[in-house]
Image (cartoon, rainbow, N blue to C red; front, side, top):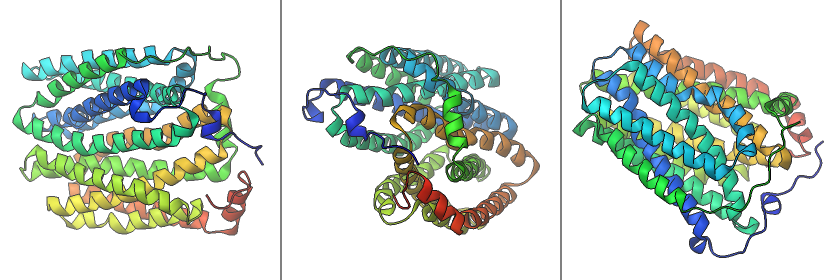
Amino acid sequence: MLGRTMTLAEAAPKTEEVPLRRNRNFQFLWAGSALSILAERFSAMAFTLVVIWSGGSKVSAGLVAFAALLPMLLVQLPAGVLVDRWNRRRVMLVCVAGRLVGIASVTAAVAADRVWIPHLAVVAFAQGSMTVFYQLAERATVRSVVPGSQLPAAMAQNEARGRGANFVGHPTGGVLFGLTAYAPFLTSTVFYLASLVAMLRLRTPAQAPGKRKGSGVGAGLRWVWQRRYFRTALLLIAGSNLLFQGMILTLQVVIKEQDRSSAIVGLIMAAGSVGGLVGAVVGGWWVRRMAMRHIMVVAHLAWALVMPALIFTSQPVAFGGLFFTTSLIGAATTVAGMVYQLRITPDNMQGRVGSVVLLLTSGASSMGALGTGFLLEAVSTRQAFTVMAAVMGLLAVVTALTFLGRKAAEDEKATDGMGNL
C-alpha cells in the first residue's frame, strides 16, 4: 500500500492568489498554448490529405501519419526526464519556433507543387516530437504560475481548450484544404507565429535544477510494471487507441473513394470532438459512481457494440454519429483514467508515470496508422472496418474476463487501499 501522497493543491508552489482571468502569466501561457494547439490541429490532418488527394499511395499516407505519431512512442519517456532538467519556458519557445519553421517549409513546398513524401514525413515527425516536449513543459509550467487552490480550475480550462481546438481545428483544416492544398499549412504558420509572440511575453519563476541521478525513465517503467491491474488497463486502452487511429485513416480513404470533399472529413472529426467535449463532462459524473474496473468493461463493451456499424454505413452523417459516440466514450474513460492515475501515483513520480501512460495509450496510435496503411492496400475499406470491429470485440471479451473477476476487485482495493474513485 502506498503512503499518503500530496494533493495537486498541496504540491503546487505558493503564489499570489488573483483570479485566473487577471493572472497575467497564466493568460499568456493559456493563449500561447491555445494558438499552438490550433496550429497543430489545422495542419495535422492535412499531411495525409495532401498525400491522398495528390494521388499518393495508401501506404505513403500511412507512413506520413506514422511519422507524425511516432514521437508518441520514441520521445515521451526521454522528454519527461529532460523537461524536468531544462528550463521549461525555453523548451516551449524552441518548440514553437521549430514547428513554425517546419510548417512554413511545407507551405512553400505544397504551394510550389513540390510535394515530396520524405519531406512531409520528416516535418510531421519533427512537429510531433516538439509537440510532446511542449505539452510536458506546459503542463509542468502551469503549476508554477497558478496557486494550488486554483490548479483544478486552471487544468479544467486547459482541458476545455484542447477539446475546443479539436472541434475548430479539424473541420477548418479540411475546409481550408478544400480551398487550396497549402492553406491549412499557411494558417498553421501564422498561428505558430502568434503563439511565439504570446510565449515571449510569459514570465515564470526561477526553476530549481532537476536531479540527474535516480530520476531516469526506468523508475517510471518499473513503477507501472509492478502494478498488474494498472498496467493491464493501460495495455487494453493502448489496443483500443490503435484501432481508433485506424478508423480515422480508413475514413479519409472512404471519403476520397466516394469523391466527396475533404471538408467532409473535417466535419466528421468535428462531430467526434463534440462527443469528446460531452464525454469530458460525463467522465466527471461517471468516475464518482463506478469503480475503474467497471468503467473499463462498460467502455470496451460499448465500443464493441458501436464499431460494427462502420461496416454497413457510407453516409457522412452516420459516420459523424459513430465518431461522436466513440469519442464520447473515449473522453469519459480518459477522465476516469487520469483521476485514477493521479490518485494512486506518488507526487514525486507523477511526471515519469505520466510519460509511461502517454507512451502506452497515445504511442499505440502511431502503430495503428502504419498498420492501417498496409491493411488498406490489401483489403477494401469495408473489410478493414470489419477487421477493426472484430479486434475490438476481442478486446471487450478480454477486458470483461480480466476485470469482472474477484482478483480484479482485490487488485483495485489493494492499489492505495481504494476500491472506487
